[in-house]
Image 1: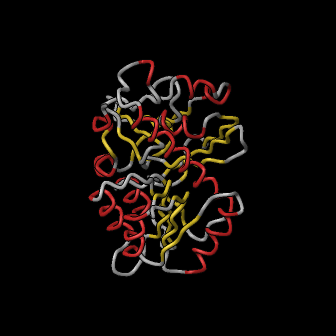
Image 2 (image 1 turned 60 degrees about the horizontal axis):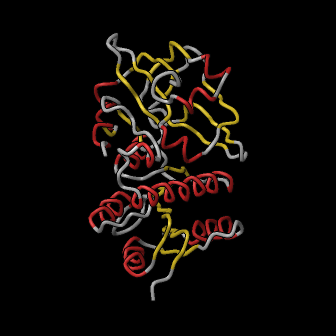
Length: 268
């Protein structure tokens, strides 16, 4: 019999599984678990899960191989990656290969819950798209994809090259639809260095959840969009143009843009 769960937690450390189970069950989520990816794939063939929380470093099949396998099997459950070996490379590679979020260990209860809530909302959005596949019809548009010439890190942030060699950075409309509403915005200061795959801004939504924005590229901030600090609604109204966050001088754009997903691949 096919069972339905909210979360499948995959980790070879029982203490991590117990922590995810305790934190998420206390919020009413139905949690199932596996101590390795092979067992998880077997469960995925029999049961339904809204989201998956998966460790990267596991025996036999690691997290990246697991991502490849669920793509092959056309499993649509969104994946949140976790790891105790937190590096920029792991973060970026996870998001490039299809994960919707990346959480370093040890994580706090708030960090895992915030990510899980976004994952649930992401799953809901994807289900709406499946039930309303023709997003070209204005009446069924659920979110606006990034412009074709942009690049994105996962589904949350985007980068756009300018003719001057600088790069604009912003937040995707899909991410904004998932967090639902912005209450506060925190930006880094001018001349600060931001690093690809690391936090570059923080959004607080009206439900008091905190959402870290990961930078799509590395570079020095030469301009902030001060207008959005005065009116955060600008980001929600026009995330790809008037609602940009930073203009930066990139450090390794030729290499790093190759680690991002071209938004031209998102055309419906």
